[in-house]
Length: 180
Ligand code: SF4
Image (cartoon, rainbow, N blue to C red):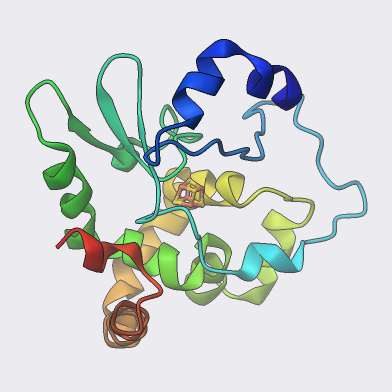
């Protein structure tokens, strides 16, 4: 598919712009067709912070702005960050900096948040076999018992996450400095 795209005249025209970059993201289906890890293994990569949030945004064909990769746009209402018919792209982007969950996900990743607020056993029992970080993120936002614990405990993590986020910001590992 990628090789067909890069040969197309439309791609060739866009590729000459320094503003254009072709990206290949790993996709997953949010239904039972999704192929889970039958060995109930949890990939070590799922314990990383999310490199997409605050780095990428998606604009839908209806001019709506999505935080991060857009994969969970229909599954996590908090990922809907603006309507570009009325909101600017920059303001939509900056609105994310007021959302502590996005900073937390950026710094520690959704699976570590689950582990922090629910404990290791809950995480193992409920997330074994997951192999896509966005599936974990969707469960983080959409599982009532996890949401309840996040609301109960998030204040305990504010100092740590703001410190880590600020450090990444200061050493230039976050893109936000360029737009603020
Ligand atoms: S892990 Fe969450 S914040 Fe990161 S790309 Fe997936 S849905 Fe977006």
